[in-house]
Image (cartoon, rainbow, N blue to C red; front, side, top):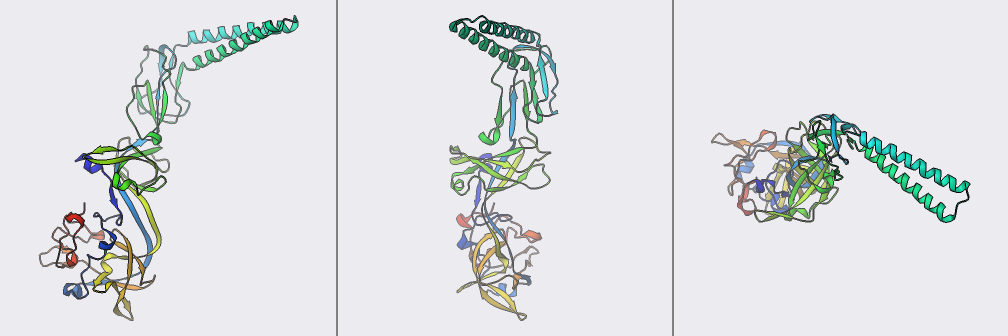
Length: 402
């Protein structure tokens, strides 16, 4: 079940509240009966002014929230831990010292290296004063260069006695205690989760994660991944968040994984803006918008009718309903694009939900296939489990919208 729930579901013609996948030719053809349908003639209607809006096509996917950056930190030098200044959950700034090791020996090494540099420089100066041979001068200059390199290395080692945070964020883990002996580990590294789409616990001395920069690790199945591309917009519903978040697709993986025989591809989404109050691992429902039509005529699906000659709406002209043929485009939820036949400002009739004799509420009852599952109309109108698709239209494959 878990694998099934995480698989992306493509909505090539439907977004928002609609839950079933409807092909373009089926979307508007099966809903609203025929002009001669007695129930349609008796259906109560209201009027609505035609206006422009936005239609979107999208792929839906589930994923989890993760920090965009995390830094697994270890001491690069050996020694005994003298101070641990970081605590789990503590906010830290870039460059802040998190822990230290005994630096006495390291400081001594710096002092010794400085003395070596001074001695080597004195020899080079003497060569110039005493007109030393070219061979001697070259050798002494090489010694000076080596001494300076050794001093730089000793300074780096001394600086490494302080474990500092390379980013501003929150301390996620602390695996250090005062008095603990550590061995130099040069493997401390940053992890850009936006690049590799991973997030995991660390055994490092200290783990620091970003707490305002986030990503979503999601998967999209093979049948849908070709619809999306890097840069597409995303709408994100995050568990625990009080409002919808937004983002863009940062990467689409080329190597698939398989679950229940279905191949899926990793998709990483950058969450837009500096977001606070979020938590690593929170569940996310992502709507990946791969096509958007703005400023197009939009009417409710319930305004459409079907006759032998095609699809039409009842346009109100001089107070009377006039059947007006229309060409429809794509639909989004319970709204549909009108490509021709109407203009902005026209007034049309829209069918209303009615109370059936059995006490349930739904659209006008029509003979034909059922709309299983009891999906809801927006604004409170119900399409209950017993409600019928007009004119016998069934969902593709016979399944209900889910």
